Image 1 (cartoon, rainbow, N blue to C red):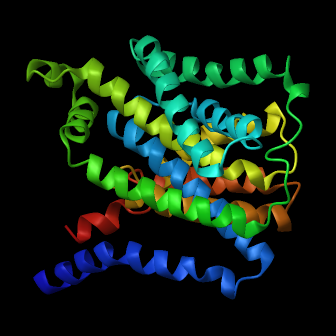
Image 2: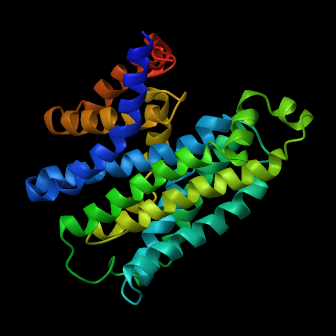
Length: 302
């Protein structure tokens, strides 16, 4: 039994490296459609892991992911023509981090449904505000973009996010966030600066989302606020994490893969009913597996 546990643990540790190597060479044999599909799946994985780092850990359910993703999209749209793409990505990360710090200082005084509603309203506020000057933005980067131009940045950023979250979860910040999720009152009693950890955790999570938005933006030939601040970017990371399981980082990864692929299949096969079918499947899984798809598997191997 111990040998089985060791093999499972070793496989989990090596699987990200093996998968990254395989995906690096995927464009050599994958068709354009499949490459675009993998790009979308990787983006959803990055968003779900980013959401899990803060909300899945602290139990502060944020529905503002679309706000930070959309800010990243528009940073590429505005600065992509005049600045090198790596600089644009760094700018998107920095702006979203500072923006989330300011938002967190205000919103993280709230708890429960109030925090969720306020963060969701933030995305809608930005969506409508940008409508007033949207005509000033004429494109993403003003050049022809191939699927590979988007694929590799998303691939690299997603794996950086996963690695960063794994490392951060072992730091004082990660431990503090987990203590807040278990019992914020107890964390305060033990001397944890909960306000500082919540704001920093929220800012780091939002920075990752903005970075993904900036990298994903060139995929679209034209950008409008409805695309950049689509409510799906707020709801899907939360749903994917809950679907896969919040216990460990493997949960949002599995949830993002299953739901994004299932959504693609249902959307192409049952276009008029895919949301109903997808919702029904998710309700059944959540009711029968309250700890997510990976919950029981992880329990058996720990």
